[in-house]
Length: 206
Image 1: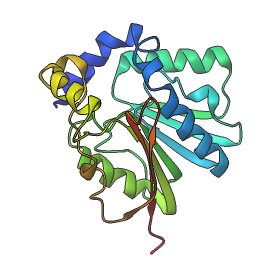
Image 2: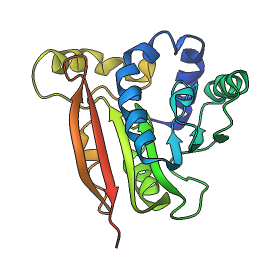
Image 3: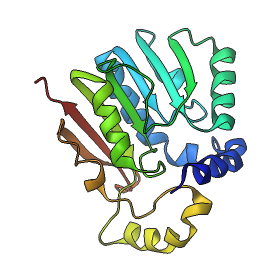
Image 4: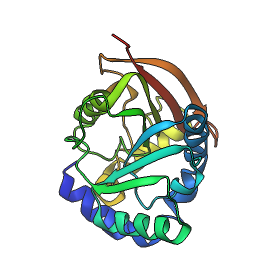
């Protein structure tokens, strides 16, 4: 999917994102932030969107958010200002394939429902691994392709609408498991009925 397509798609969705996809992805955001809060430290949220997760981070977690969509970032900045979220240190427009941060900048990277949207997700995963500190973790929540059952059928039906929806309905989990520097430490289904997956990968200390 081209970056321009993603930007245009999310410009259309930004006004109603919180009440549509925001509701669908709530369980994933809750699981990810709960896990991250227990870790603390410096966190990068890739694909911060309208900032739905920002108010749920613990105050001792220092959060930097990036997104490519100006429309989404405007809503995120308004949310931070309205709620006085002092632990959100920056919200920046950025291509996730070329993160403008030094190596080993963050203890945790959150990628919530974004990897099936970005172009070249393998490059995004490589950048995530680069900016993680040794021993750091990437916390992922996402829809991945189901081989059978209800979700498999729905994904096949949605595939032709990829550009309209702004996401890959048949996204393979192998795409995010191919980064050599990262090992799986947790993987489980999320409600409803395992539609989404909670995944934690850790950067090797060496």
